[in-house]
Length: 256
Ligand SMILES: [Zn+2]
View 1 (tube, rainbow, N blue to C red):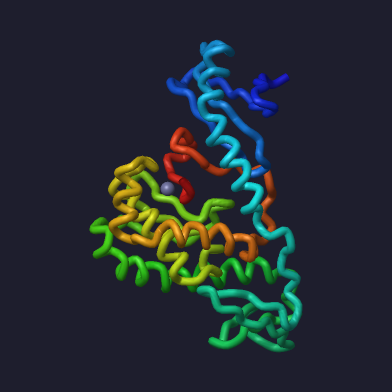
View 2 (cartoon, rainbow, N blue to C red):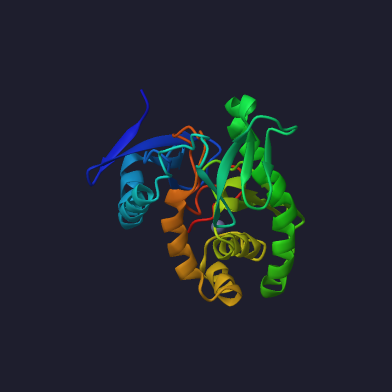
C-alpha cells in the first residue's frame, strides 16, 4: 500500500526516492497532492514541511477547480465553431475534398467521410498553423525580453500551456492557438523569461513585469478563457508541474 499523510483534512500521497535530496510538493490534475521526499525523511519532518505550505495547497486546489478544462469535447458537426487566435470560425462538412481538413480564412472545411479522424486533423492543423505563426510572433516579442530561444516547437503538452526546456527550447501547447493573441503573447513572454531565470522566483517575475507590465491581467484572463478551449481527449490524471519543486522533465510549467 502506498504511503499517505493526513493534514488539515487533506490526504497527501508520499513518494520517496533514494535519488531525491529535497522535499517537493505537486498537485496532479485530478487534485491528488503528492509529496516528493528523500528516502529517509521522517514523517514528522514531512508533516511539518507540508504544514508550512498549506496556504499554497489550498490556493492551488481552488484554482485548479476553477480552471478545469471544458468537459464538453467538440462534436465535429456542421455549424460548430472552432477558434483560431481567439476568433471563432464555423465548421462545414464537405463531401469532396483532398485533405481531411482545410481552412479557407472564414471556415473550417472537414471532409465528411473522414469525420472519425477529425480530432487528429484539427490537432495537425493547429500544429501546422502554429509552426508558421509562433516563430514570427516570438520574433516580435524578443526585443522586450532580450533572449532568444534555441528552438521553437508547437506540440502536445498535456495540460501545460507552454514550457521552456533546459537547452533553451520553447514549447507551446497547440491548444493555446485557440486563445486570443494577447494571451498567447503572455504565454510566450512567460517562457522567454525562463531563458533568463528558470525558477518562478522574484527575478523571474521582474523580467515578466519588464516585458509585459499587464501580465497579471493576462494571467487572470487566461484562467477565464481556459475553460472555453477544446482540450480534445486528454485523459485526466496527468501530473502537471505546479511548483518550483517539480523538475520531472526539467521543463517549467507556465503557471506560477
Ligand atoms: Zn513558468
